[in-house]
Length: 503
Image (cartoon, rainbow, N blue to C red; front, side, top):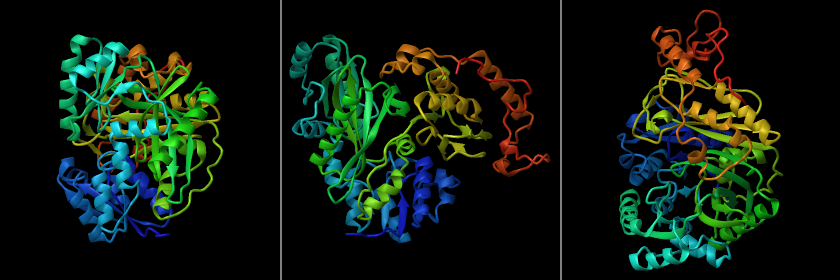
């Protein structure tokens, strides 16, 4: 049954809120932004047709406040809610509350989300669907855990049954550490997700992390839109993703796609989601399903020439899935964070004094940053996603190197130079990928002398007022026809070239 969406409330912030608002506007759907007191001046607030304050800066009192978000939807007459990613996007109680309010939830059904959000229950669904899983046990009691470890061999992995992102996870290298790891993982999982259940799997020493994009409608159609390589991770958080997965044998990729579709059909999955797997040699194992739009969805959009947010809205309106286009080329995404990579990725805050966004063929930057934007400690520190497309992986990689060279953000310490070092490295160019890539190649990364020199020059120019520091600097002119916000500190330095290393 078709139920066209007329007004969409976006229950999120930052770049994903902007991303959803843009697709909705393209479809002629009115939009409502919600915001906390800390985000009153954020770009997503001004980009939407309407906006509603939902609470103080703390996420628990604003973006995680189900009652406040539904009240905002009712007050504005929104007939649908898109949760984005993070915050409430995988909370079945939120999806259920939205539906009970008579509002369309853009995502899977609450019971499906509940089943797949529990990793133990999801493992059972995978096993029933004939999808391979990493050997493990569904209990964390000490005696059976010790027996399993003795049989499977150390190391083993203790994981939280709910949630993800590396929280509630411990690698156990020997029997002497097992009891403490079980207690610590359970305690951390309880604090992070309100659910202290953990389970145990055999630890794979050097796997790749590969995921399949799935999308299904309410008419029984489910399709897969290729795979994404997500092996480059720091503390279990992805930082660089790409599609297709380089060097993945076609036969293995086809088996993984078939497994993802079997899982989706077995669970009755609708809307966009991702089936994640570990790849170890010629074998693959189910990891989890993320029942939402994934952060790294742009690399799939670029290869398949699609708009996944628009597809989500069409499915939520009762529409039918179109036949996907044939994939083409290759795409790479780098997540730029407000972190100090030189000092153990210490979180950074501050005001954006200058932002230079790279451009050119095949370059896309999804971000909520602008000159004058405040980066606070209240929320996730992702500043934006730089995505580059090419006819093949090497062209996409070289475009990414060039784009990171052009990128400049002054005022907030960020990871752009760190990402540039990775993408420009020989191990990355050779696609020597595994979830231990950072540990093996960039564990003790330090900025180069050229990086330090550039930072000092930029700081001096800011202090001298060469770039302008006001919130509206991007609109001010310097009298020579150029906007101040268009000026790069590097462009001001004749003959200066940042990063002279290999590309």
